[in-house]
Amino acid sequence: MSENVYILGIDMLKFGKYPDRTFAQLGGEAALLALDDAGLGVHDVQAMYCGSVFGAYDMTGQAIMREIGQTGIPVTNISNACATGASAFREAWIAVKSGLYDVVLAVGVEKMPRGMLGAGHETGISLEGLFGSASMPAVFAESGMEHAGKYGTTFEQFAKVSVKNHHHSTMNPKAVYQKETPLEEVMGSEMIAYPNTKLMCSVNVDGSAAAVVVSEKKARELGLTRAIRVLASALASDPWNPRNPIMPDVNGCTQLAAKSAYEQAGIDPLDVSLVELHDCFATAELLHYENLQLCGLGEAGRLIDEGVTALGGRVPVNVSGGLLSKGHPLGATGIANMYEVALHLRGEAGARQVPGAKIGLTHVVGLGTASAVHLFEKA
Amino acid sequence: MTQTDTLAPRPALPWIRLDGPEPFVEGRLCRACGARTAATHLACPACGARDSIETYRAPTTGKLLAYSIVRRSYPGVPVPFISAIVDLDDGLTLKGNLINVAAEPQALPVGMPVRMVFGDALGRTDKDGASYVAFFFEPSA
Ligand SMILES: [Zn+2]
Image 1 (cartoon, chains in turn green, red):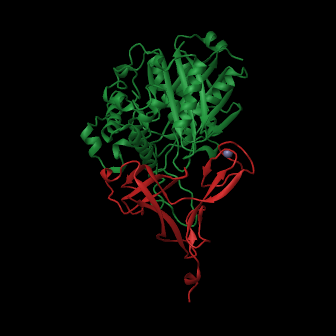
Image 2 (image 1 turned 135 degrees about the vertical axis):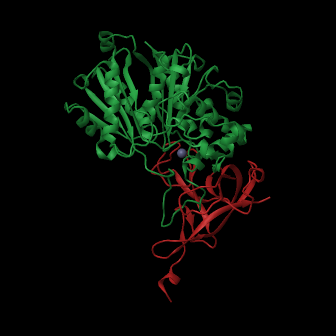
């Protein structure tokens, strides 16, 4: 068993539309960038995990190896909704932590279909608009309105999340957008599913990200200068909740993963310097402040009002621009979140650097339901 | 008489029952732990007990827990409509369209009493030409 596990190299492609590139090309490019960042080559990699939602049936991991070098190592493809990338990373972490391997590659890659994402079980007829909506904007709107009903959270407070994250992304060249969106613009943009306007919905884009995960032994051999220590890796599925899945529950699952992560790391939520969390819709971000214990129950609205989670605040959230403005290629998102945290812990985040960042948290949650929480610190 | 005329309406969800004098929602109750669900499972999802599930007729009154006013949906789906989560009086949760009320946040206070009404599934028919029966919610106060 490896005492500690480290990220030695990590990188991502700028999120956007890549109609002329394959899953394997996008994933392969991120893999090579991550290997370069680690100072390693494909022959050093002993196992590989590939996360992709829409590419999972096509053996995308093996196709990536055909792009970067077919060394015959074990490759496993993973699909776990919006927690796909983080789940692939976690498998790499387990493989190294167990002592089986010293160098494992985790890749998350996605090419997104066009249009609105959603679910809905069918009888003989379409159920959308007959029994409410199964579209993602509406489902997350309802979760937000449950919070609003309990704590008085307002449309304006939800909209402020988008203002903040779009502002953050103006400093992130790898985000799909770099554009300020003032409050009036966010609240006045097309209403998709009240209270989520178009600018409060994450962007469907293509993208990829990759991480090289190594053992204590390997990290010491290669040097710890830029290594990131994995303090905790937690994954949860949805525990029993009487309303779920009629009303999909993203809270219980996230709370379980967060609790496990804090226990593994032996830290207090107040020790966290920055957070990259799953703002698939603006309504969701506020719920996760509480689920991740960044504040008490019912306090999320106050946090956004007081700028606590903006760059410069006590615990900046989604300084990358988040899914709302950096973009959300499902399978790539989890590892891209880790890339952002790694930049800050290494002090390489440029204009958006969180000063003195010591511990970073990443979170994703995918309906169905899977949530992953990871904690990292500079080695 | 065409074949369409002879087809009986079908339930739009598996837990809508049409074999009584009035349509109703059939709930499932775990005798071991009291959990209620609409869907069927191999064992109780709350406690894991097997052979503990009994069916019952769900009440038709409840309270609005949360909603979204949907203004853009999948292509071809008429908007706006109100997508509502309702906690029935016995604790069973259902999702449905909230009708006969303005699609405005001011008209939709959380906790608002609602009742379930059954009706044709907005004219939707399947490949056999059969019509369907759905439930909707409307304010009851
Ligand atoms: Zn039970």
